[in-house]
Image 1 (spheres, rainbow, N blue to C red):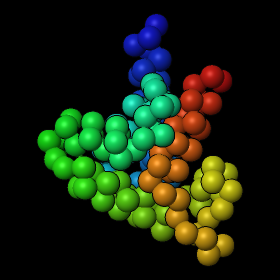
Image 2 (image 1 turned 135 degrees about the horizontal axis):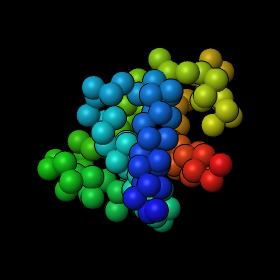
Image 3 (image 1 turned 90 degrees about the vertical axis):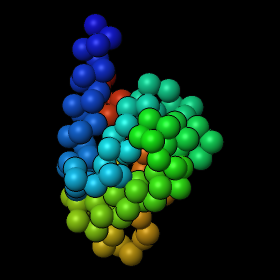
Length: 122
């Protein structure tokens, strides 16, 4: 049962990222996807992105915290510029057209993880 839930969470996470316009070829895509799955399992992780999340991702992908942070920021920037504007409006309450800046890495991860968690309950 738990394995089935994990697969559904992974599928929903992937669908959400693709809908938001995160290109799958970017390194940041893998990092964001893994981060979202980690946060869905333990929401406390998003409260300490620089102390818990980035180091864990860096360890898993054999890179540095700085490179993880930058790749995630780049993936978010690309999706913010090219992604589905209505999805951003729905999730964040604002979009690029209103002139507001893109969400921070931790805000993006928290909001998307929460949206996936809500979808899991349906």
